[in-house]
Image 1 (cartoon, rainbow, N blue to C red):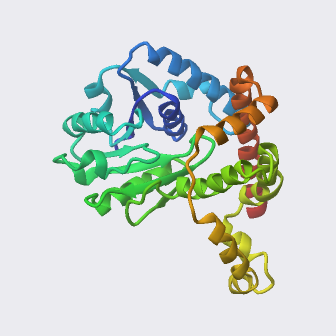
Image 2: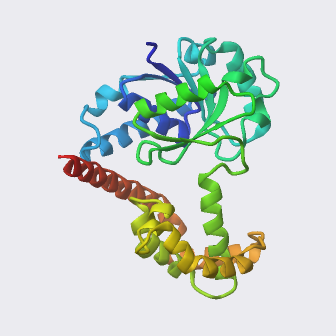
Length: 315
C-alpha cells in the first residue's frame, strides 16, 4: 500500500491535516507555493505535536512524527507517489479551479483528490477536469487532529469507489467521516451551525439576551450534552417513550417557534457592531491568540477525557 499523502497548502487547515496523517503513520508531503511559509508551518506543527504528547494524545515522540512530514515547494514532487491528495488553499472558486487542473495532471492516476472546502462544492471547480470522477470534498473541522469529524461530499460525477476509498482512509487516519448523498449549500455541519448562529444573532439583535448569555446557554446547557451525543439522541432520551413521545409532546411548540424563525436576516453592520462591542468587553483583541491557544488545550483535555472514558466503558 502506498502510504504517502500529499497535503496542498501549509496554512491552518493544511498543518492540521499533516498532523492527522503523520499521527496515523503516513508519510506526508506538505506543499505550499510560498517557500517561506514552510519553516513556520513546521515550527507550529512541532508545537502542536508537543502539546498532544503532553496531553497523552500521542504515544510517539513529537520529533519522530515530525520526521514523517516533508515540506515541499514543488507541487509535482509533493503529489508524486501519493495515494491521496488533500487540497487546503483559500476558499475561492477560481483559485481552486486552477489548482485542481494542475493536480489532475500531476497526481497519480489512481489518487483521490479531495478539497478541504468548507462551503464550495466540488462541482464548482472540477467539472472541466478529465479526471473529475476522482474529485470530492473532504471537509474537516478545525483543528482536525482534535475534532475528528470529516464531511465527504461527492460531486454529481464523483465515482462511488472514490468516495468509499476516501471514507476508509479517513477512518484509518482516526477521523470520523460522514457522507452526503448529494451536494447541498453549506454541507451538513455549517447548515446546522448556521441555523443556530442565525437564531443567536436574532436574539441579540432584538435585545432579548446578551452575547455572553447566548454563549452561556450553549456552554453550560446544550453544549454539555452535545459534547457526547447528537440532537436526535438527545430528544430520544428526553421523553419517557423516546422520539415519537418527544415529538408528540413538544412538536407543536417547535413548529410554532419555527414560524418566527423562518425569515432569514443578513448579519449587517448594526448587529455585528453590537456583538463586537460585547465580545471585546469580555475579550480584548490582543488576547484573541492566547484564547485560541486556551481553546485548543481545552479540546485536548476533552479529547483525552473522551479517550479514557471510552476505554473505561469497554473494559
